[in-house]
Length: 374
Ligand code: 3PG
Image 1 (cartoon, rainbow, N blue to C red):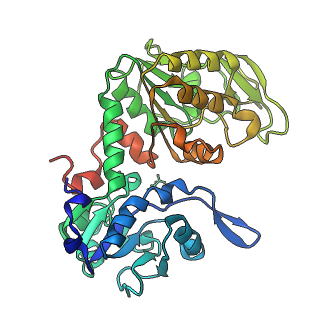
Image 2 (cartoon, rainbow, N blue to C red; image 1 turned 45 degrees about the vertical axis):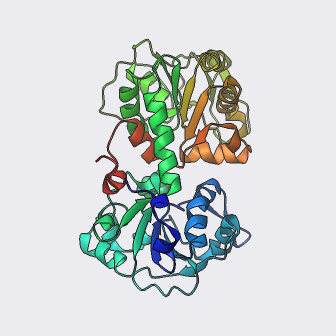
């Protein structure tokens, strides 16, 4: 994989650089203005942007986003510490300033169908391609994978850091390694469990993933979030630790405190919304004795204060453990940023789905296109 640091200042001066980033951050509408509720995923690109900027390159920031970059361009500029200009059409770039953020690249049909002709059009106004968007590297999309056929291509600093840290947690000895998985999107987590059954000492399971297991074991889980999955896993494997007690309520709004009891059949109108104190104690004890801990996905409905106890205490146990700690996933990141704890972990991945696919041992198309797999 060719890296950005292989490029010298003379390679970059006045060159037009297509920099694939992932600024797909949540945007909230407040009092008629739009605001970012998570900034980590933008700050994470600063090293690569500063490097290209100082070398005198003209940088096009290209990303997908759920809505539009138009209304948040000033905020992005402030986070990056540079003036950033907004342009609508990456196929006809004007390069009016040194740093330009282009509108959502997924507005073009060719992007998500990985169209080679579209990738060639994307590339035609540029001299160099840099991919720093680890968190979208699991997508076979034109600006992520096939564009590398048309430009000299390099990985950015963030991409290299992501791969290095996630590789490290995969390759550390199994003894003393703990994987903690919660949150929704159960199907994306089962392959991680499969890959780590032989690579970790403990796999701690909570959230919708645990609900799915409870259901598979024949328990009544009321209205708790659950997913139908095809993948078969031996949930009785002793490495797998499921909640022993749960925090339950009929009301998800958080206006009433949940009740705690050992895992049992629930009433039809009840939800499992957090892990209980016995489970927190068990999880924290395992973490305390771990050397490596990987966390993806909250352990309950943690965006609501009264259901966040399990997630917050377990994250705190990770911080205190002295272990090499890696966290990731959109909901986890939003919570940890809100709590001001981002710098307390050894590594915070910008990846959600991409982190899980990498940890599952899958080959990611974005990395493949950069020559990572040889
Ligand atoms: C993410 O939020 O994980 C990335 O931006 C990828 O987004 P996607 O799931 O819409 O491809």
